Image 1 (cartoon, one colour):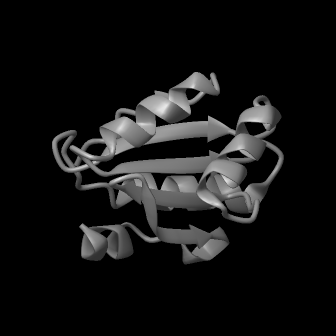
Image 2 (tube, rainbow, N blue to C red):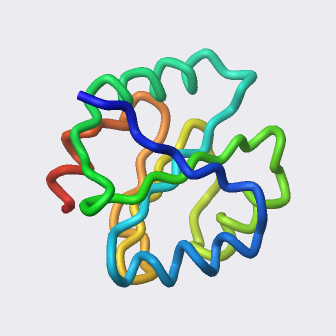
Length: 113
């Protein structure tokens, strides 16, 4: 299995693009904290179990420490509380799955698709 081909979320304008893309293909945001061991473990587990093609799911990676304003904007746009690690699965502009910490599982993402 290949690791996800992450698109780095580094500009607030990318959120509008992400929402638009989600109407054609679901998008996943992984909010990561470089200061958190649990975030590293959750990311590694997700990447190990990754089985999605780019036609099934578009993965976005957000370094929540380096890009705090974007992380805050994600919370506001999708009306979700801030966590790291956290995934938000976006389909047709709406969050259809939110998970954080050790509740992040590729299998749960697959079930939602």
